[in-house]
Length: 346
Ligand SMILES: NC(=O)C[C@H](N)C(=O)O
Image 1: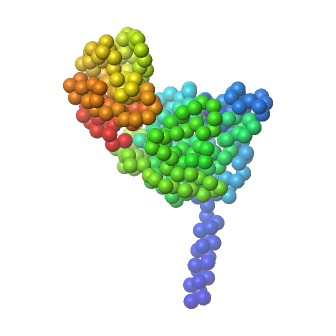
Image 2: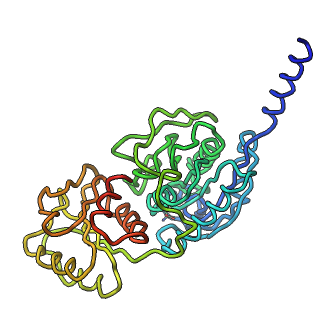
Image 3: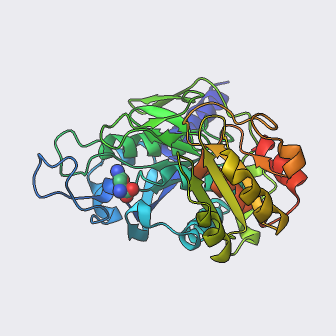
């Protein structure tokens, strides 16, 4: 009937007018950096530009979503601590519980973006999109990448397609999984890479998802930031030739509850260190074998008898990611079988 047709047109118009609400949580980084000259792509100061100015530089976001900004921190991401991770995640969780928030974008330095994106993926119990974004060049540089990365982040955060996909990272036109993406070069915009490939791309205000994350995350995670107030200390020891055994003791004495061994090759442990790692394990510290090799999988009982020594393996998680998962898991359990299960499921 003409009346029904009219009602449907009104409904469509209302839907078109009602844009999603996206909150930008700004934490600093190079995306908020400024250099002295447009030729300075690598020499600049990070964490200078406030969130309102970041948004003003990308007026196109307002065609996609109703956007508002909050300045959570103003730091370079190498200065992030566990306390700040917890504070940020609690804010993301609180915002996403609000009916008037459809998605959250976190602007972040690229150095530890892979830690924060995985942490949020593990502990924020929401299916709404969470996008973590940074830039490799400051906004003052020729060919600055931050404005497009931010526009892409808002596009993904406002999209229905991103719901339930886990925390994503929009850098260099791609949509990456916050779980496994990592920074692979410190100089060019194509810095973020996952051995499993991106989840898709974002082009001119449209998302193109082609795959999804098979690991537990967000609403399917057993962890919840609303019940976590601090994280236990986890150390990383980097594998190389001629290692210094006392480093492990120093980590334990400083309070490390777990040590991620960023071993060579298959997460290998030199013969002269095996007794040291067995010893710290017998005194209670969790030993997790990861690898300094960027890709691949560290397999249980390959290279070392993990069952016999009661060690845990990190599978495809790099040492920085393994450290995050270990810290989160240790808020719930010290049991190595449980920890190994968690290292398989996330
Ligand atoms: N590109 C960057 O954002 C690097 C900077 N050091 C940071 O992580 O804050």
